[in-house]
Image: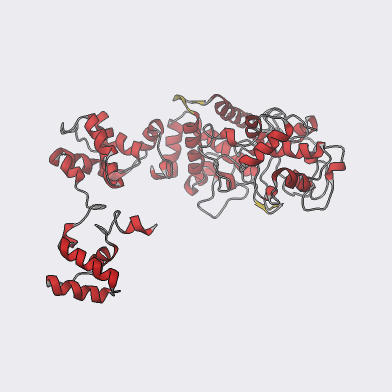
Length: 474
């Protein structure tokens, strides 16, 4: 039996329906198809192996692209930049698995959707989806009877049950108490929150996010800023102001950990934070700036860990910049030592990252001589841009190339070429300690070398930096 996947179905859901259609227990079917006993201890919707996808494609006749599209991989480039198999990812709820056991809720479900069709939807793995977009009701992530996390695969894993003989797939049954999750109606959701969620889902589908008061922005850039705004809303000062002066609801389970992310919160608190996000987006950007000022927030929480900072969002964050009350320095245009092509060659051929960064600053400044814009675009300080431009204007390209790191230091070459060859032969024939090497060098040049110089001669390299120690440490 080869059941076809439904629209918006998760890979794990289709795989469980495939096992049920062939009356096979899920652990046996999983090992037969994948060859891995630990297939369900990970998150198959995030870490589907290529050989497993090819085996399923050959067994079911489905194209390989169709099977991959059932996973969360299509979200890459639209909602998330990358999808590592284990580490936490923005906008994707973690399953919080320990073996077969789910320690905390991670997967959501809609009782009304399960009554219409027994399968899991891809949108139920998105952390910003707290309402059913079709029925307008609140999603659940735990059994209403026993409060156990929703984990349908547990009906046939770890309990010794045989769900393959049941008439229906296991999606509508609690794996802990056996309650029917399709019974009862969920509470209706908040209309503004449903509109915000629909706006985000539409942007993920179209690839363009129409930002209020800004126009269309690239969807990945917009989702990065939205997650950053949720991080701002989670700061202590902002939470106190939103729940106090603004009259919004507070979190049910606030965390004492300052680094807890949006995905770490329970589903009701994620809905509350999305309501806070909707409030901050109203009348963008004036209401957001006023709220940050009233909460006492500077610029740094608005751009912390956000690289690169979009220019339109950076302009809003600059309105909260304190910088000692000083405006960004005005340096004028770049001196005509090199044209844009020459700056490009110097940047691409820079021997060290620090020198490449300075040439990159000059490359951007040549096209737009504004210190704040270049600093925001590259994620560097105003002072670094000012010092780099000032040095280049005064000293020319040689002032930028003056980088000692990663280049040989002639001051540490005490021996002549003939003496170095003699020392190299002595080291290959007779093992020498550092003290004996120091005596050997001192007897010939009248100066006792330091340990760094001895290390250079023992290794036979030109310097102690990138061409020496770091190059040979691997």
